[in-house]
Image 1 (spheres, rainbow over the protein chains, first blue to last red):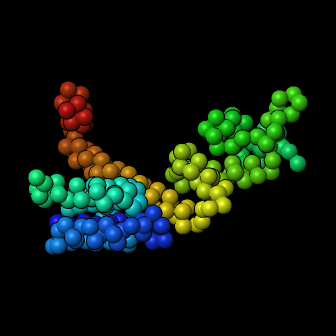
Image 2 (tube, rainbow over the protein chains, first blue to last red; image 1 turned 120 degrees about the horizontal axis):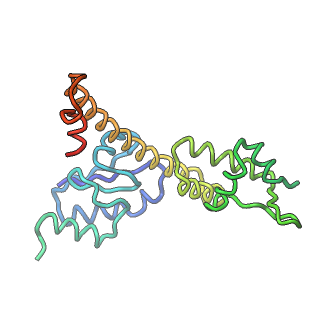
Length: 86
Length: 132
């Protein structure tokens, strides 16, 4: 699974909590690919994925969160996608 | 120094109706009213209206301009807050451009399909495609 966080440099909202979210993702899925992309460097890709607001999180090439999720929201989404729920 | 609505309109090159519209949209408001009930503006109103016009030219909606004006007036905000709004606007514009390019390609295909000028409207491939 690939998680991509799209941010704008200098955006406090983008930086807030992102390291903790990354830790949550890696703890739940050690083989997850976590990328952080500056939208200004990757504008075409960001548009292709459907990013319209910042920060946004895309999972496997699709925007899932148009603002930073809580740990619980991220966990729930990752579990749902991996079929680990029970 | 106060300015009448006509004076603000002429200095900022808009109509008085536009100023009243901006007021209804919460973008500007008169500093005070005259005894006769006429709107009176301060000098900053002209700068504000020019700001609104320029932001509209850059593709910002009135709601977004309201947000920018709030940031402009906020002591807690700084340039990076405005920058984030601008980057988001760029994303939205790029997204629209992508959609319009795709639409343009569809039209290229339809135009290429319509090669016979004297075909009846019933056989027009462009109209047929749009009716799908």
